[in-house]
Length: 181
Image 1 (cartoon, rainbow, N blue to C red):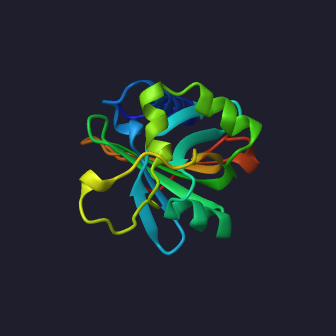
Image 2 (cartoon, rainbow, N blue to C red):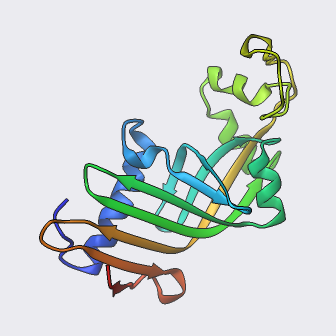
């Protein structure tokens, strides 16, 4: 990635990479790190990126620890480091949980058949088990959609000639401002 020529091109590059992350499992943006309360972080898979709405979607097992944490405090952050582009993307927003809602059921219905098994694990994610072989996939469906409505996007591009940082806020209409790197 070349140094951004404008705030608009910088934001466009970020959204382009986020959208590519949904479609391309090899993209750096496919597996951002999600931070919730605590601090607690984990790698997640980006499932949808909607620039017009300013939202990102993540799927989860409904009994995973992150679901409890988000229910208690919906403030979340996501982090991506794209090594090929020398670009850091930091995203902050509020997560909304969809479990058993029409939206969650619609999203789940479009998942590949083999993926449904993941959301039928009968043990609670993170529970102690004697070995991986005893994992059972006979539990009730436990699909959760996490929709993050972004409040801020912070971008940092590292380049030999110059580093560039910008912060974009929803409340400012995503106009953005340059920041010291």
